Image (cartoon, rainbow, N blue to C red):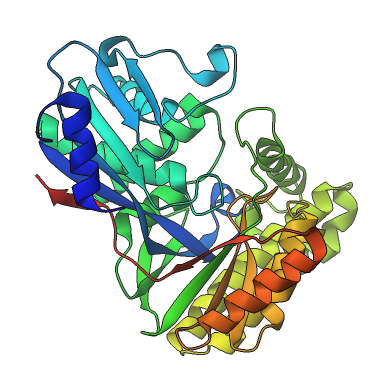
Amino acid sequence: MKVDDLVDAFRDRFGAEPGVIARAPGRANLLGAHVDYSEGWVLPAAIDRAVWVAARPARGAETRLTALDLGEEASFDVAAAAPPVSERRGPSSWVDYPRGLAWTLGRRGIEVPPIDAVFGGDLPIGAGVSSSAAVEMAFLVAWEHLAGFQLSGLDRARIGRTVENDYVGVQSGIMDQFASVHGREGHALLLDCRSLQHELIPTPEDLVFLVADTGVRRALAAGTGFNDRKSECFRAADLLRPHLPALSTLRDLEPADLDRLRHVLEPPLDRRARHVATECRRVLDGAEALRDGDLDRLGDLMARSHRSSRNDYDVSIEELDVLQEAAASAEGCYGARLTGAGFGGCVTAITSEAAAGHVREWTAAAFERRFGRRPELHTCRVGTGAGIVTG
C-alpha cells in the first residue's frame, strides 16, 4: 500500500484532504502459542506489513468508513454504537473493530468525534499476523490525534484487548495489540503477559520472516474452538489449584508438577496444561537463544512449539502441518511453526535474506504437490510500532 493511493482514495470518497494518516503493523510470533491469556510469556515482533488509516473529523453526525482492500463501506453513530457482537445476531465484521473502539473508549469516559476514514494495508486478513489488532491500533492512533487525547502504549494495548474480548467476543490475550504498539525495528519483544513488562531483544539484520498462508480462514469469535481453549485452560488451573496453592494460572505450572498431578486432569485438559507449561519454558529459552544469536536453537524450539500446538493443543490442521514440515526442511530455514490462533491461517518460518527465495519455492512446491494449489507467501522483516505517518 502506498500512502499516496490511500490519500487519493480519501479524496475520491470524501472530496477533501485527510487530517491524519496513521499506521499500525501486524506481528509475527516466534514463540508463545496460546499462552498470553494464561499470563505466560510470548516472543513476538512487529513486521513491516501494516494497516494505514486516512481520516478527518466528519462533517455529519456519523462515522463513515471505507475498507479499501475489501471494496466495502459502512457507517455508525459513535455516540450510540451498536451493542457487542454477543448481544446481536449474526457474525462479526470488519466494522466491529473501529465501532468497538468507540464503544470501549466511551465506557472509559473518552468521547470520540465522528470521522470520515479510508483504510487499507498489505496484511493478509485472517492469516495469523494480527490484522484485527493492526486495524484497532491504527484507528486508535488516528482518533487520538483528531480528538486531542493521548494514551500510553500500554493503555492502547489494553483498549484493543477490550475491543476483542468484550465487544467482538474473542477471548484473546494482549500480545497482538502490545506488539503492534511497542514493536521496534530490528528487535523482538519478550513480553510477560502477567506483569506486562517487556524486553527488546535485537534480531539479526538479515532476519527474514516467511509467512506462508494456507488460505484456510477461521473465525475466532464466540462459539469457536479458540474460546474453548481458553475455557479449558482455566478449568485445568481450577482443578490443579487445590494441589498447588500458589498457582494462579497455568503459567505457574512446572512440567514436573504436571507429571506428578496428571491424574487430576482428564483428557483433554492434561494436554492443554502440558502445552502451556512447556510453551512458557520454550519462550524463555527462545529469548535466550535470540540474545545469543543462536537461530538454530531458536528454530528447534519453534518446531517443538508447532508439535505441541498440534498434538497437545489441537489447533493445527493438515495444511498448516504440510507448510511447517516443508519450510523447516528447506535448506537455509532455521525453523517454522504455525502462528496466530491456528485452525487455519499461516505458518511463519525464519530464514536469512540470502536463503529466503529458496525457502519460498521449496515450501510452495511441497504444498502444491499435496493440495494442487500454490499457497500465498509473504516475505516480511522486523518492523516498527504504531504511529502517525502524517498529520
